[in-house]
Image (cartoon, rainbow, N blue to C red; front, side):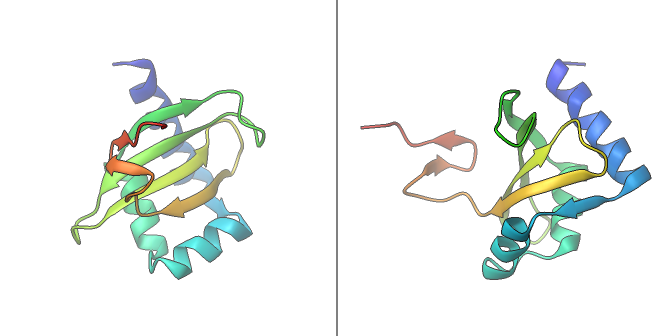
Length: 108
């Protein structure tokens, strides 16, 4: 198991045991993009970590990507060491920032 897979397993266990919190920003973004709490939980349980941010200003966190059962793509930026786990932001990856759901656009 890779380090990122282990990290994701720890996140899943923490969410299962202690739940999660959405920041005001994450809640606002989820509502604007029509993502439900169910979608967020599905992303955590079925997704994968595609970027790790150990030095993030809000503390260590990572970017989780999931293709949801409804066919939509979802990104979550989520803390990796706080209990309960905090969702920092929620969004659908798309251009101009994302070439594909897992590949960022190159800087010009």
